[in-house]
Length: 623
Image 1 (cartoon, rainbow, N blue to C red):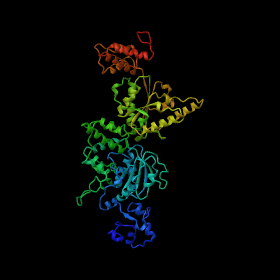
Image 2 (cartoon, helix red, strand yellow):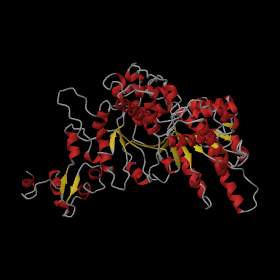
Image 3 (cartoon, rainbow, N blue to C red):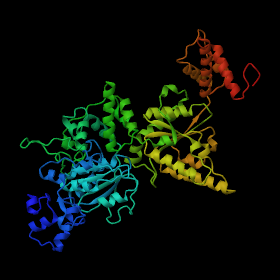
Image 4 (cartoon, one colour):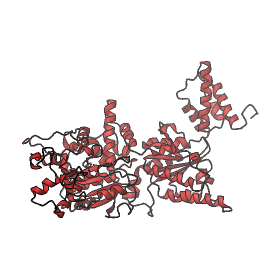
C-alpha cells in the first residue's frame, strides 16, 4: 500500500513527504516540516522516529516505535530497553512509621501537577520507603529507575516515554557519582520525578529547573512494627497483606519485560498498571491510613518465636532495606529447613549494611557471650548499659528529643581503660555479639600518615563508612590517635593538635557505635573523655577471678587426674590474655607427648608468660 501511495514500489514505508500529502500540506510548508525536527514533540517524546536522515527530507522514512504500538493495543509490558534498569516501586510495608504530615503533603504534590523533587535520606532505604508510602496515598504508579554503574548510555528517552504512557512517577535511586547529566535529562517538566539519595543536594546538578529539596524523615523507634509487618508479609504471599509486598516471582515479573502475560479479553484480569500503588483517602487520615493497615485489613503477622524488638533494635535500616532483610531472613530459614530464628534475622540484617569498612578495618564476627567474661560487677554492669544505650538511642535521642542538638549524631561512644590482657577487646566482642553486629577493629597503621591532612582523610573515610554500616567500630590502642593535645612549640605540634580537633568535631556528629581501648586512661585528651557516654575501667584480676579465668580457659582442654589450677592462679599474677596464652602453651606441650594437660604443664606455661614480660618467676629467683 505504501509503495502505491509513494508511487514507488521500492519505498514500502511511510515517509515525511507522504505524511504532508495526507495532511493536505505542500512540501514547502515550513511549519509542517518543523514538526519532524528532532527537537519537535513527535520525535522528542518518542512518538515517531524519523529514519534515513541522510536522504532528502521528503524521502525520509517514518516509524512508530514498537512500544507505542503495543501500548495502543493494550500491552503494558515495559520497554525491553529498560530491562535491568526499571521495576515497579513496591508498596510500602504496612508497619512503617514515618511523619504522617510529611507523607500527606508529599502525596498531595504527587497527585497534582508534575514536579521534580530531591529526597535526601539519612539511612539507606528510608527515602524509597517514604516515596512508596506517599505514592500509595496519591494513587499514582511509580517506576523505580536504577542508573547503571558504567558510562554506558542510559535509556532516558525510553524511560520518559514509559512514564508518559503510564502517567506515572519516576523514582531514581541511587544516583551515580556525577548525577548532573542524569538529573538535567529527566527534569523535563511534564513528568514527576523523585530523586532519592543520601548525599546533600548540589544546586549545580540541575540548574535549569530547581527541584524541591526535602529531607526524608527517619524511621521512628517503632520500626519493630515495620519488621513485624515485613516478616508477616512473606508468611503467605497469596493471602492477607502479603500480596501488597510482592513475592520473588512478582518481582521477576515486574523487572523482566515480557514475563507478565497479557490478560485475555473479557477475563476480568487486572492490567499491570492496577494494584501497584493503592489509593488511600487523605481526608481525615487515621494513624494507620498511610502505613497501610486500612488498606490491607487487620490480619496481624505471625509472632516469631523470639523477642523481635530486642533483636531488631540495633539495626537502623530504612524501610526498603527492612523489606529486603525480612525476605532474606525467610530465605535463610527455608535453606536451613527450620523456622525463622533470631540468628536468621540478624544475619540478614547485617547483609544489608555497607561493606566498605573492610577496606580500612579488620572484621570480626563475634562468637562469644557474657559467660565468656570474668569481670567485677561494676564494669560488667557498665557493659550491659552500653548495649542498652545502643539499642534505645533512636527512641531516647530521637523520639524523646534528648539529643544535644547542634548537628550532633546519635552515636554511642565508650572508652575501655585497663592493663593489657584485662579483657577490653573481648568485652567489645561481647557487646557486638549482644547487639548482633559485626566488630571492626581499626588498623591504626593504615590511618596515620606522615603527610599533613592525610590522617584526617583516612579517618573521615572510616567514619563515613561506619555511619552507613550497622557495626561496632573498635579503635584499639587509641592513644596514638586520641591522645592529649600539647603546647604548640613547632609545626609538628600544631598539625597534631589540628588532627585532635578534627576528631573532636567528627565524634560529635558520629551516628554509629565506637569503642576506644587504652592501657593508660590518663593519655586520652579530656575533651574526648567528656564526649564519651561511658568510661569503663578494667581492673587487674584478683586471685578468685584469676582462678575463674584459668577454669574458663581449660573448659574444653583434656586434663589429667589431679590437675588443679588453684596453685597457678594464686602464685602467678596474670591477666586474662596471659592466662589464655599460658593454657595454649600447656596444651601444645601436652599434645606433643600425646597426654592430657597436667598441673606441671600449667606452671610451665605461666612461667613462660612471666619471662616474656620480664618479671621475676616465683620459686626460681630469675627472670
